[in-house]
Image (cartoon, rainbow, N blue to C red; front, side):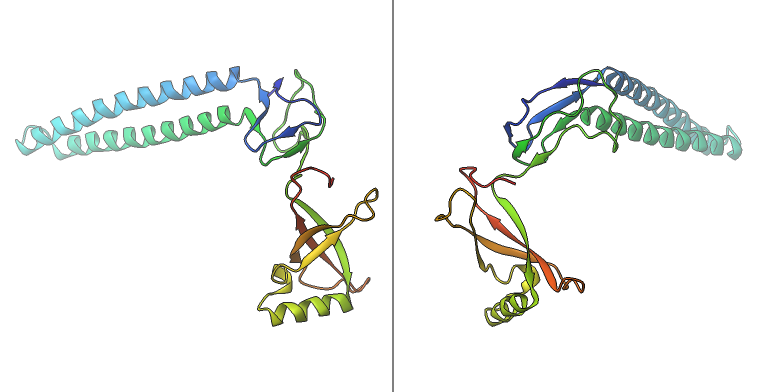
Length: 217
């Protein structure tokens, strides 16, 4: 569809669930209305075919119609039921398509600039509209050498933890360039499951609380 509205200012903080973009909803509302009409029509057909089938059952018990006619009414009723099931599935898909025209923040963080303006075509799974980075908490990725890895792994085992699961929450500190004396404290929460043979290092991740937003991605 075509982008209709942008609901944020570039570079601002957004919360999970905030509305960011709206795709032109008119064709999707029309498709939803059409799907609803198909459901209504299918329900009417089910009611009619059910009535015909029940009437045929009565006539068959009285010996007034052949069994083949009863079978025909049964098939018509079952076919109408199947048609209703298909129409209801199409209605659900149309409802989801309309819901997806409202693009919301999947998590809280700082949104980048918009990469597309209203009026431009948006293609599902292809068009990047913007990006969001998590600010609080914030993750730091870093490499540790083999010796450090084994030291952390041994410490984790002694405390009943596993290195790949964060070594039981080992403390990690980080400093920023303009705050030489300040060390921000976080917790190791993940490490890769093998060493890089080329570098002899392993990628690890630590998570830091960052409510004041001092640390930046």
